Amino acid sequence: MHLAHYLGLLHRAQLNLADAFRQVAAAHGDEPDLEHLCEQQARVCDRHAERLEPFARRYSEQVPDEPDRLHSELFRGTRTGGLGLLRDLQDLYLMAAECDICWTIVGQAANGARDRDLLEVVTRCETETAVQLKWLRTRMRQAAPQALVVAR
Image (cartoon, rainbow, N blue to C red; front, side, top):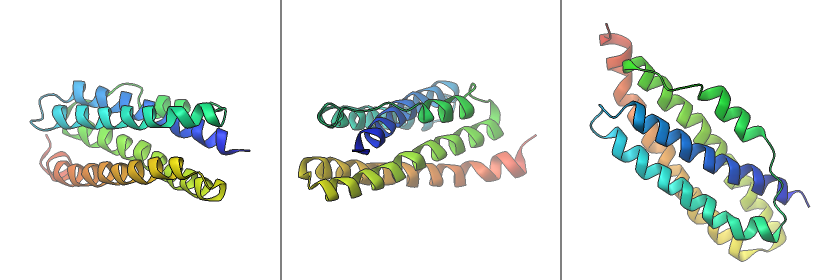
């Protein structure tokens, strides 16, 4: 069963996204809302990873290295300034989008396996990931004019 592969992929992607949110929070603490909201979203990712753990054990999770490669490609260190903030938010968005599609795929597998418990976790976490994506899109819209037009 290849569900174990995707559970490992999603579990690791959630942990990496939590780490990335924390890095962005620390790097852009001068932004009034960003530190608090990124820390909040990191905790959401941590909870997602925790909710996946029983299923990782049930299906003998396999841990592929793809999320680690994506994380290391995107986060070689946070950037500074308005343009840096915009790029860091875009990287978070890409990482969250990976989680989003993984939730969809795992949800389809949960349906196929008739695993109601996993499907319940997927439904809840998928909704929270959609909120993360929406927030990141909104925050990028706010940052873009300042970073791209007004920037020094």
